[in-house]
Length: 257
Image 1 (spheres, helix red, strand yellow):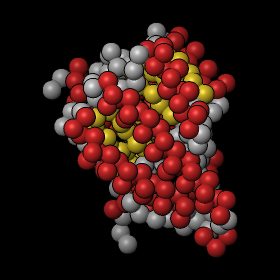
Image 2 (cartoon, helix red, strand yellow; image 1 turned 45 degrees about the vertical axis):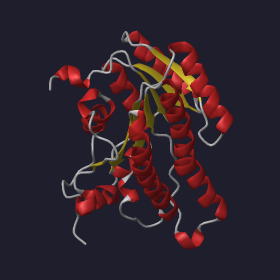
Image 3 (tube, rainbow, N blue to C red; image 1 turned 180 degrees about the vertical axis):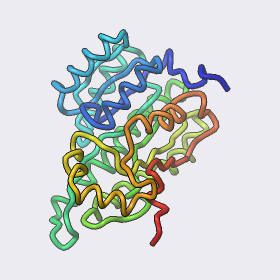
Image 4 (cartoon, rainbow, N blue to C red; image 1 turned 120 degrees about the horizontal axis):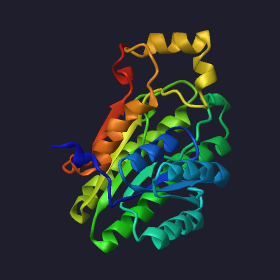
């Protein structure tokens, strides 16, 4: 295997939730590997800024408005990408929300909002992508972004954990059925990574103590540490991988009980 095995040249990748955080990082990684990238999110103005940045680096990039809770919005986003570049053969199914609420304080609205975005939305986007991949007969790669909370549970995150556990099982079920269509379906289950949404908390003493006590490697992950797993699953380097869930968490899910 050579470095060219990880190349995404001649591929088109659509990344949901690409306006910030993990999604923006994934878009940069895919573009650097040679893919045409379609950045999808609700905040189009944020997307346009990243598109201009990527284009300034010599990459092919475009933005599409996409609300993963709305089937018409998902269809319109894919249609725009297909009109521009013919087909989407890599999907990074990343869009999601976080809303810590203790179980006894949770409303049905909070529960439904979480599942509608993090599970139903993941299904909605993956289904649209896989139908198109199967129809053109050329296959593709779908990477669902799960979480270690889909494998273990945490306080005040029951709805999030249930949604991400669903994403893990969705990944395995899709992989089983879509292998015959030459569509690989895998997942990445990140632990805690520094992003613009959590940076302030993890800079506090409480946040730092939490990481030191819970994560065997005693630190947060850095976004670049997701690059290798992402490229492995997206590229020919991972051509015999489907139904896998790659945990990238500094050992968090294996910590002592």
